[in-house]
Length: 448
Image 1 (spheres, rainbow, N blue to C red):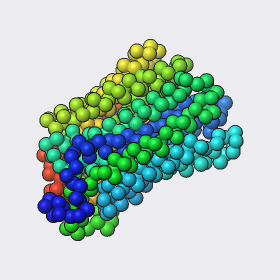
Image 2: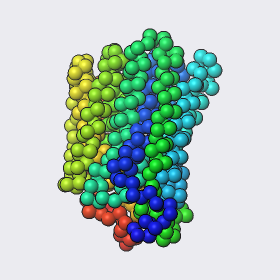
Image 3: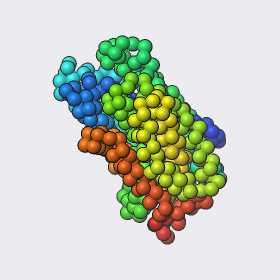
Image 4: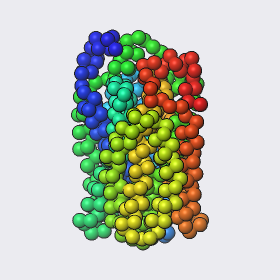
């Protein structure tokens, strides 16, 4: 560490962990605001403006298909930005990902509807969604590493959990902005131009995130690796060849968390409005309440993970996913706004337990020279296989069976996958990040 402290590029390493964590959270929240804004708009607006169809569910299915495109692009972003992050640094890569996300989201605000430019509208929308996915593919891994690689191993889960506040905070902002806009203007005005304001606000949020990210220093572990000239020519290849077991284990461990999150926070809006015929505000308000509950719950579960370990918290969250999958739709089917809010809150508490662990757990699986690539690839593989498909599978299951319980069975299966991965994993709470490389060379399979 002394070598890193003498490096001129690390002269700002005196920045405190709370400031670094706050910077990671701010940038992550902005990127997730942009990403979730698209998902929320897909359920409320895009199905009518860019994918008109006689059956509202068909239009929504097409809108969610473009939503999934962003997830498909995320492994590409993980590969490209992960490589850049392992070779050039965590900080520079995070700045690049934030710029990509902000520009693509801002451009969506000015995209004409289908009735104006025809098929070009959904095509352009898909391209911009692809850019969003690439940007997000390199965001989470860098944000987590920026915090976890700065030290405080005894509270690593707590500090590494702060970037995971980005998804609920970003979703809360997205749902809140759209809720306010849809509530203060007529339906026609909201569909015509009101929703575009939310996308335009992305430019302001990106500026704030950039200022914070420019302020923080590169991580000491990366600076140490750079000073030692350790190999960084093809980190993605090294990660896949030497640590594929860790990548798969980490990816499978997220299935319950990722599928559950998109059902609890996104598909619920479609279920409440288009299937149950309730007002848009019912679903949006339930999601916002759930996000508010998640914000303090994530650091609280992280403190627990630092005390008892990552594995027990993960196992508990996975078991809870299996059970809550059925309670969730039972509560939704009551049509009662309070019950619907309770369903989302329960789901978001489970998500919070997962989120409290994954930042530290993933970081502890990979050595410094491939950590960005390994963490990003594992995280985004799960997003493609579980998160991107969840709303589409949910709509297809309801269309086939006419019941939310078919979706419950699907979510329970995702929870079971996470449970299996958690049972196979070994505890990583005591891992020294600076020593992971040496250990991994001797035993590539840290987690069975």
